[in-house]
Image (cartoon, rainbow, N blue to C red; front, side, top):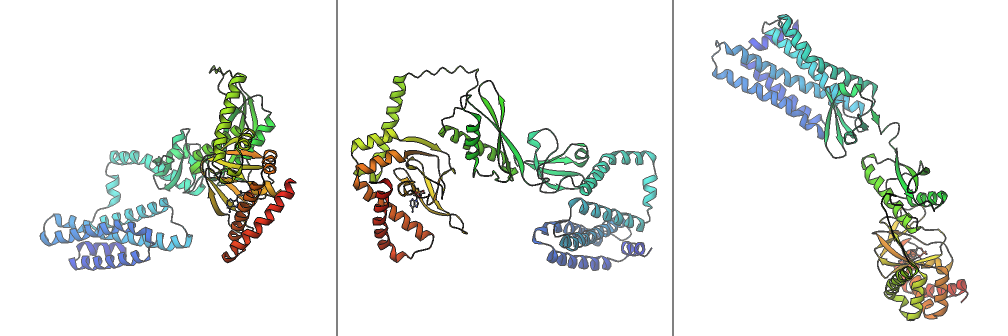
Length: 509
Ligand code: CMP
């Protein structure tokens, strides 16, 4: 056994051999550091520690006399530490550098641990033999010792075998989202599978360490397989008076471009139950953001709430809550008058409407309605047909331009007292841009008819409006990079005149 002879020479040999070994190991440490990927540098802590132990033992040898009985033990520790350092460094080179590069991803922790463990055991047994001990005889000295070791290793070995079977069968990989019991707080992302346990980080950012043996017996739900997307469900009730088809339409429309909700597979709605207080709807949608699923569910509920609110559909209270709400005609009239007054004052803040008489504003306020939008909701979509104009009472909106083949770009933001949606309304063309709520917004909506009445009553308004339209159109053209800045003023004037004609023609003024 050549290896055994080398070990024996090292144990009995001079300190010179120890120094040569140390220098060789330090060289290997630097080579490994150079070859390891940047993140792997912390893996060098263990071999560095072994080298320190080796150095400490060699220094001890300087002060302890050669013939002292402890000298053999010191030599043994010194040799073992040096061998372990070599073993670890060679292991790192083979597993992390050679195999890691070939596999294009980090070597599984479990493979690394087992290979390392076997190597350490092999080196320990070799070193023991070199000292004249027969490791086999140590293990078999007493049946009791063997039994105790066997029993205590039972669980560890079980975990090891289970860990290996996880690696082979791959019910989940590192990075997958899994549930391994019925506790919701245990759902988490797998961050490591080692020889003893699997580490999972839950949504609360808490690390849960699950012994592999336990995972082998548990029914595992993998949310990341077969695809990264998984279906989510939200339940919502709407009053019996509203026909289910209408509710389906409003909900599906509300889910368009809700953050985190995939369009393919498309969301769907099922009329789920005729419940005590209303009809229950089961809203199903897919998301590929499993880590943000609670937020995505919440966003979906928000969108549905706002959409139902705008459509005047009631989300019923549980029937157990006695909700007595009697509204007399008189009270209703008072409420309507108060919201019309609020709208009238908001109309007073719109610059271009200052040309209108107080009586016209009052009439407009009674004919308009108010709608609520949540942040991120699309209010008007580019290229859609249009018959409404919006005046911002509260909140901020973003105007976005989608040019063919280009990213959507922000044109501008509008706030209280400003308006949008006029371009398509007064020209009869499609919407020129998409407008989205940036914050929660309360918007006054004016339909085609009332607006027509106001325009016919005020030629000045047509002029003012044409100016705004021309400026906005010019800005859109600039944004689409179709016009140099220098031509701006001339362009606005020309467009303004054209718009006057177009508005008059469209509204037959
Ligand atoms: P409309 O085309 O009906 O729908 C999109 C709306 O975005 C448009 O009317 C304008 O009200 C608004 N809009 C487009 N461009 C601008 C701009 N440059 N500045 C402000 N609002 C704009």
